[in-house]
Image (cartoon, rainbow, N blue to C red; front, top):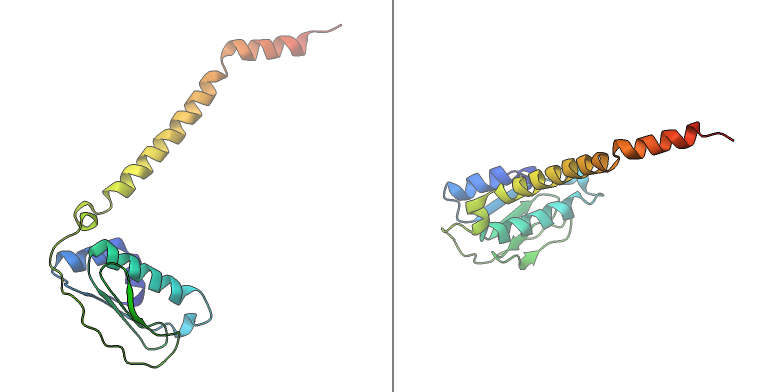
Length: 145
């Protein structure tokens, strides 16, 4: 994967579904050296390791290089913009995790449930303002001394 692709579920899922046994992220973070982006990308790579059950190797010319175990443990890591050689044996995995099998279905389900809950709350709020309540308000306005 190219650096930013680690952020997209579909790209990572496709790499695993098509037989990827280890995930490799190649990146150049020179433009983002003084921002939080390299750390963010590193955190996303750790998440992808756990999600896919695969080791992740990050090779960066100017960002953070690392080797991450399938459980998210950091085996080795460089500091930002540090020249280094990393070496580790990583397991090659073939199976699919639950996250690989269900994909984005839980996210979509929760999003739809959230939207339906908002719609119901709006409906219930309007329903509680019954015509009788509105008439009482009008009667108070029209009442005089």
